[in-house]
Image (cartoon, rainbow, N blue to C red; front, side):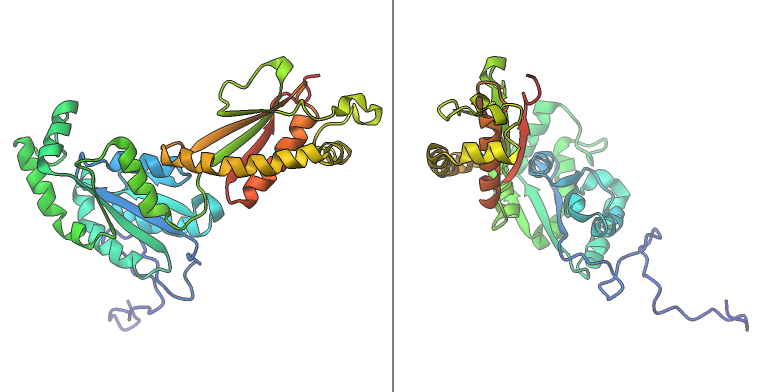
Length: 320
């Protein structure tokens, strides 16, 4: 109130609020920088594959929240602006399970549109016949059927989502899609033009300690001269510069790396096509200390340059 008892004029700099009192971000100079934030809102018909689409994005490294009340989208976007790479890509499943909260989705999306953020609405759909079959197979009630029939719930939900389906950026009809087909559709829709999202784990090991059980590829570095027999290198390992230079300075090592990286490219791309989002490459030598470690580090460097996300570990380093 003002001093004369009249309502105080609205502060033009005060943030607008949603009906439940949650402040909405404004696309202004005062807002956080959100240019690098990518948001996918997953919605659509119950039974059409929303959970599978969310799991696919989670496997690709996205931060995923299931059954999020629409009003929480804006605080989550604001939080992502201050969290760096850890929340630069997140997906939220928003659907009729939110009950009365779901009704606010349209107004929340209007607020999101004002922000400098890359966001898309992904709508999962399927025919009524397919949805009935899927619900009958899991023997669960439809979230909005109440005391009515399953078909009544499906019809009511389809009417509720009619406008949202029309305005969605991505619509995927899963009626005739397998789980793997749906995964491909999600990846192509969301990750088109982005960097590689296959996670590659390169692990060095010693053959005398056994093969890594989870290896997709195994390569043997015992064809290279062993630094163990060089007195000044014996106590060092493949991460030390003298050993690295000794191993990688061999022409056979460079020939191997050039040809192996070239041969890996179609293999790694093929893994993605077969719904495999991670791969383990095991690089071995006798004890897992010198040659395998040096080659693993160099192989990881080259694959990172090619755009892959790579983690390099040395399983048996120190066991001697």
